[in-house]
Length: 170
Image 1 (cartoon, rainbow, N blue to C red):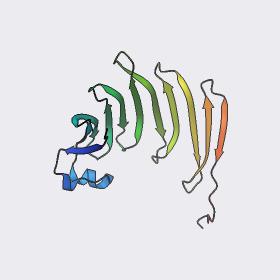
Image 2 (image 1 turned 90 degrees about the horizontal axis):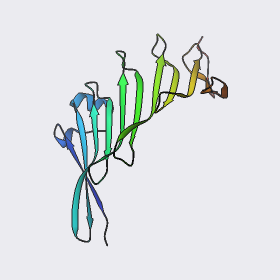
Image 3 (image 1 turned 60 degrees about the horizontal axis):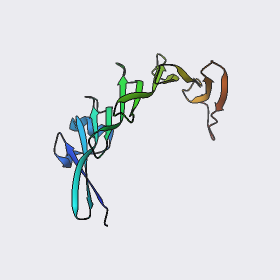
Image 4 (image 1 turned 30 degrees about the vertical axis):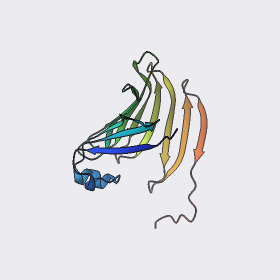
């Protein structure tokens, strides 16, 4: 039995313009990418849509859906951006055994006035807090600390960032 996989990319513009580079996606105005997989087993080919990815006009991924060979949705991720192009929400869905899509978890992001991420919050499928991370930065904008709190708002870890050969600007 021979197994092999061929992935075809179906693009909304010609294939030669495609690039994984975000600048190229934006410049090329690619709106979607569909990955088709052909599996050959015992001489019989089966083709199915494996992944569908949707991009916003700025070239950022806003939705990605993974399908099973039977065409059902296995996983789905959505991303929301604010007017400053900061990612403010990320949702992850998985399909349960009854083929129903359910929210697996959600991440929410908060930024300061300079557009620097200051908080990341994770929620479960029922909207209950799982954990929250707070980020601190030095005057030059380098991340210096990440504090993680549990669902009861109890500090559970602190990560410090140390930069070698760092020379503070005069």
